Amino acid sequence: MASLNVKSANFTYKKISILFDKIFIDNKIVHFDDIELFDFASEDNIKEIKSSISWGVAGALTFGVFGAAGLLLGGNKKETTFVLSMKSGKAFIASTKPETFLKIQKKINKHRDYVKTMGGYVY
Image 1: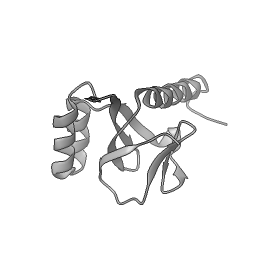
Image 2 (image 1 turned 30 degrees about the horizontal axis):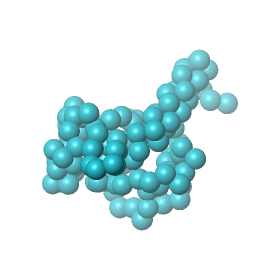
Image 3 (image 1 turned 60 degrees about the horizontal axis):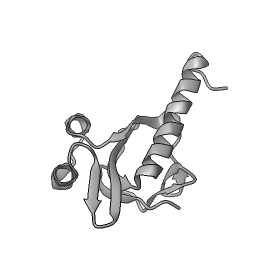
Image 4 (image 1 turned 120 degrees about the vertical axis):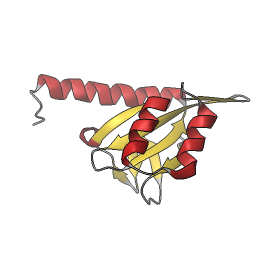
Protein backbone atom coordinates (compact mmCIF):
# COMPACT_ATOMS: atom_id res chain seq x y z
CA MET A 1 0.00 0.00 0.00
CA ALA A 2 1.39 3.39 -0.99
CA SER A 3 1.42 6.04 1.67
CA LEU A 4 -1.11 8.83 1.39
CA ASN A 5 -1.22 11.87 3.64
CA VAL A 6 -4.61 13.65 3.46
CA LYS A 7 -4.22 17.35 4.16
CA SER A 8 -7.84 18.45 3.88
CA ALA A 9 -11.20 17.05 2.77
CA ASN A 10 -14.73 18.39 2.45
CA PHE A 11 -16.33 15.17 3.75
CA THR A 12 -16.03 12.84 6.70
CA TYR A 13 -14.04 9.68 6.12
CA LYS A 14 -12.37 6.98 8.18
CA LYS A 15 -9.53 6.21 5.78
CA ILE A 16 -8.34 7.25 2.34
CA SER A 17 -5.68 4.99 0.89
CA ILE A 18 -3.89 3.91 -2.28
CA LEU A 19 -3.53 0.23 -3.14
CA PHE A 20 -2.43 -1.20 -6.50
CA ASP A 21 -2.53 2.31 -8.02
CA LYS A 22 -6.19 2.73 -7.10
CA ILE A 23 -7.68 5.14 -4.58
CA PHE A 24 -9.97 3.87 -1.84
CA ILE A 25 -12.21 5.87 0.49
CA ASP A 26 -13.36 3.84 3.49
CA ASN A 27 -12.41 0.62 1.65
CA LYS A 28 -14.56 1.51 -1.40
CA ILE A 29 -12.76 2.05 -4.69
CA VAL A 30 -12.98 5.45 -6.35
CA HIS A 31 -13.88 4.59 -9.96
CA PHE A 32 -12.09 6.57 -12.63
CA ASP A 33 -15.46 7.63 -14.09
CA ASP A 34 -16.31 9.32 -10.79
CA ILE A 35 -13.17 11.48 -10.78
CA GLU A 36 -13.68 14.99 -12.06
CA LEU A 37 -10.20 16.36 -11.30
CA PHE A 38 -6.94 14.66 -10.37
CA ASP A 39 -4.00 17.01 -10.69
CA PHE A 40 -1.06 18.65 -8.95
CA ALA A 41 -2.15 21.09 -6.27
CA SER A 42 -1.96 24.53 -7.85
CA GLU A 43 -3.43 27.90 -7.07
CA ASP A 44 -5.92 27.59 -9.95
CA ASN A 45 -7.37 24.16 -9.14
CA ILE A 46 -7.51 24.88 -5.40
CA LYS A 47 -9.39 28.13 -6.10
CA GLU A 48 -11.73 26.20 -8.41
CA ILE A 49 -12.55 23.70 -5.69
CA LYS A 50 -12.74 26.36 -2.98
CA SER A 51 -15.36 28.18 -5.04
CA SER A 52 -17.72 25.22 -4.76
CA ILE A 53 -16.88 24.02 -1.25
CA SER A 54 -15.46 25.37 1.97
CA TRP A 55 -11.98 24.07 2.79
CA GLY A 56 -11.41 26.30 5.77
CA VAL A 57 -7.95 27.13 7.01
CA ALA A 58 -6.44 23.70 6.29
CA GLY A 59 -6.91 23.97 2.54
CA ALA A 60 -5.46 27.45 2.37
CA LEU A 61 -2.49 26.43 4.50
CA THR A 62 -1.90 23.33 2.39
CA PHE A 63 -1.45 25.37 -0.75
CA GLY A 64 0.71 27.95 0.97
CA VAL A 65 3.01 25.28 2.37
CA PHE A 66 3.34 23.13 -0.74
CA GLY A 67 3.51 25.75 -3.47
CA ALA A 68 2.18 25.84 -7.01
CA ALA A 69 4.21 22.87 -8.26
CA GLY A 70 2.68 20.55 -5.70
CA LEU A 71 6.07 19.38 -4.45
CA LEU A 72 7.27 19.13 -0.88
CA LEU A 73 10.95 18.79 -0.24
CA GLY A 74 11.97 17.83 3.27
CA GLY A 75 15.19 16.01 4.06
CA ASN A 76 15.29 12.86 1.94
CA LYS A 77 11.52 12.92 1.55
CA LYS A 78 9.88 14.05 -1.67
CA GLU A 79 6.11 14.13 -2.05
CA THR A 80 3.65 15.30 -4.65
CA THR A 81 0.65 17.19 -3.34
CA PHE A 82 -2.49 16.78 -5.43
CA VAL A 83 -6.17 17.63 -5.58
CA LEU A 84 -8.85 15.03 -6.25
CA SER A 85 -12.47 16.03 -6.76
CA MET A 86 -15.33 13.75 -7.66
CA LYS A 87 -18.55 14.32 -9.56
CA SER A 88 -20.43 13.76 -6.28
CA GLY A 89 -18.85 16.94 -4.87
CA LYS A 90 -16.44 15.16 -2.54
CA ALA A 91 -12.89 16.47 -2.76
CA PHE A 92 -9.61 16.29 -0.91
CA ILE A 93 -6.03 17.50 -0.98
CA ALA A 94 -3.35 14.88 -0.22
CA SER A 95 0.27 14.04 -0.84
CA THR A 96 2.05 10.87 -1.90
CA LYS A 97 5.26 9.79 -3.61
CA PRO A 98 5.71 11.34 -7.07
CA GLU A 99 5.86 7.93 -8.76
CA THR A 100 2.56 6.87 -7.14
CA PHE A 101 0.89 10.09 -8.27
CA LEU A 102 2.15 9.65 -11.83
CA LYS A 103 1.02 5.99 -12.02
CA ILE A 104 -2.50 6.91 -10.94
CA GLN A 105 -2.62 9.93 -13.23
CA LYS A 106 -1.49 7.77 -16.17
CA LYS A 107 -4.19 5.15 -15.44
CA ILE A 108 -6.91 7.81 -15.18
CA ASN A 109 -5.82 9.39 -18.48
CA LYS A 110 -5.65 5.98 -20.18
CA HIS A 111 -9.17 5.19 -18.94
CA ARG A 112 -10.48 8.55 -20.20
CA ASP A 113 -8.87 8.01 -23.61
CA TYR A 114 -10.49 4.57 -23.79
CA VAL A 115 -13.91 5.99 -22.92
CA LYS A 116 -13.50 8.64 -25.66
CA THR A 117 -12.71 5.97 -28.27
CA MET A 118 -15.85 4.09 -27.20
CA GLY A 119 -17.97 7.18 -27.84
CA GLY A 120 -18.36 7.93 -24.15
CA TYR A 121 -19.69 4.50 -23.28
CA VAL A 122 -17.94 1.72 -21.41
CA TYR A 123 -19.45 -1.70 -22.00
